[in-house]
Structure formats: structure tokens, C-alpha cells
Image (cartoon, rainbow, N blue to C red):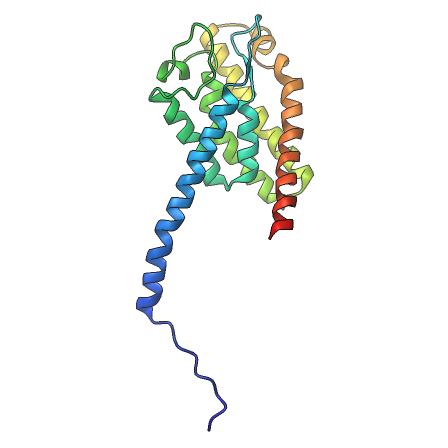
Length: 204
């Protein structure tokens, strides 16, 4: 009697069938993440503190972008924020409620349009940079800071085009008032991400 153990070979048809079954599950999981992520941004967008000296309100939207950038892969993070913008463009109430501003596409061309339209690129940048640092806490701070600067810069540039204001005026309206809050969001996003990862490692 031979001591060799016969191991059943996986046929090509079996591998194709397995791959065909796994692919829809992957798409379904990604779709669920995109919907959940865009809903998270929408909820944060409705946490608003209007500022009487600027048309740009203080919201938690950017905090959501930072967290998703750290949590998701670059493509999935960008896709989630793109889905969020599409949801808002078709009229869903996902954007921040700003007085005297209609929703839908018109919101994207208002004072906050520059911040909103760059969300997918910012999330992609955050995710890519953080993964290149091998997921360190310092890398999380640096990547979210880079993404935040991109959002502030594009938002200010859009505001300058829209209002025809000087650089000093635009910085006073669209950048400087938000720097302390954005700094707190950067630290909070990094802390939330690392806290989640720690809990996840303990439960695996």
C-alpha cells in the first residue's frame, strides 16, 4: 500500500466557477462600502456651524473625507466621494444646508463648490500617501494634512474665481478661519482610524 496521499486537483472549470461566484460578492461588498461611506459624509455634512463673515460654513464634511481616505483603498475612497457628489448633484439632500442656496448641481457651483469637487482627489491622495508610509500614525497625520491642504487650496481658488476677490480677502474668507478646526479634524481622523484598527486586531 502506497504511503502517498492523493490530493484532488482543482479543475480549471472549478476555478472559473469560484472566480465567477466571488466577483459579484466583491462588487456587492464594494457597493455597500460606497453607499455607507457616502451616507457617512452626508450625515457629517449636516453638522453645520454657519459663520456670519463668510459664505463657507464650518462642517464635519472634511472630517468624513479624511476618515474615508485613511480607511479605504485609494480607488474605493475616490469612488465613494464621487458617489457622494453624484447623489448631491441629482438632488438628494446630502450637501450641507446653506441659507439661500439651492441643492443639486447649483450647490456644486456655489461658494463651497471648490471644496466639494476636489473631495474624490483629496480622498485618493490621503489613501495613497498613507499607504506609502506603511500605515504609521505620523503618516496618517501627514497624509490627512496634505489632503486637507488640497481641499482648502481648491476651495479658496474657486472662491476667488466666483467672487473676484483679492488673495488676502479669499484667504480671510475661505482658509484662515478653518485652520484650527481642520487641525483638530486631522488629529481626530488619525485617532479614530488607529482606534478602529486596534479594536479590529483584538477581535480577529
